[in-house]
Each structure stands twice: as structure tokens, then as C-alpha cells.
Image (tube, rainbow, N blue to C red; front, side, top):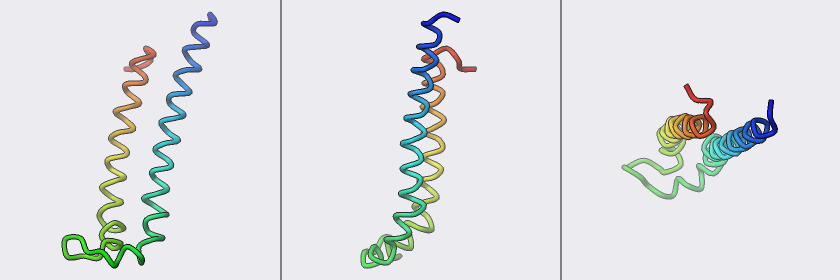
Length: 86
């Protein structure tokens, strides 16, 4: 294995790790922080529902699906950039 391969592998892992870190931070926001703040968000109404309730019931699910899609899309791009894609 050449040093270029090791450097390329390290850069691939760095980008993958950074992507996972961002996704996990967003996951914590939508899974823990927003539900924790739901009572204060309930003073705002969205589509006839209290915003805190709506964000916990619908908004977080939409965010989770979007995050999964974005992570897969970005990871495929990272893999292709370093020649380890399908």
C-alpha cells in the first residue's frame, strides 16, 4: 500500500466521520431537544395544531427521513470521489 492510498483512505474516513457527526447532531436536535422544548413551542400554532405537538409527531419524522436520504446521497458522493463506490 502506497502512502497516497493511506492518505486517500484517511481523507475518505475524515469526510465520512464529519458527515456522520453532522447527521447525529441533527438527530439529537430532532429527537431530544425539540421534544424537550415542546411545551414552550405549543404557544405557536401550525396547521391548527400546537407547534410543539406537530414537531414531535410529524416534523421529527419528516426530518429523520430527510436526514437518512441526505446522508445516503452524500455518502455515495464521498465514496465515488475516492473510488470506493459501487
